Length: 247
Image (cartoon, rainbow, N blue to C red):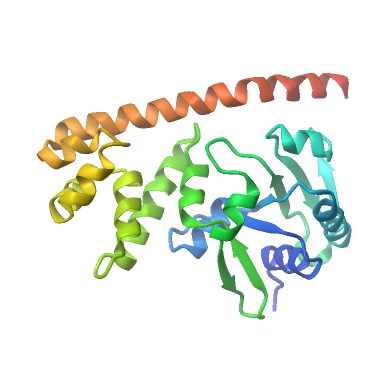
């Protein structure tokens, strides 16, 4: 049987007691919004003890830091991703991307209690970033992230729409990405929709049943998030270019 390289990475992190949260495409698979990904993306607690455990796990995986920045806590705190390539036979060539700070996502100590735990076939516990936090992390410049964000919300809606909690309805209203879904929710849960419109004004168009205006407002909302992400990464990309030149 061919070893699963992703499971090898995650089981090594777990066995070394690294406090991590799986995110990215692999996390989307667990939530039923499948995305093929060759990488393992994790958020970690950038505390000295946890970083020491992460270093041990990376050593076991025979993982080398590739590209820039180097593996140093100051880069994690500034929002950079640190990239590694594994050479362990059971995870050969698997890339592991590590982050500690993400735009629009709460600090690790706040998102840790909201995690979702899954169990792999071999019994390994896999801690996955909570759905709401994963959705926030997907608000980037990349087209594929917006497609995946939509799938995440819709998969969650399909799984829970028959008997939702008030919190789930509020989540769908705040993060839904299509006019039909938001219009249907506004019609079914008018009080929740009016409350949610206080923080997401475009829901007024969903309440009014104006799908054309709602579609335009959703596009504008997405464009604002994309631009905010570009602005966030601009100084970080500049720093990476400086590091490449220094190399």
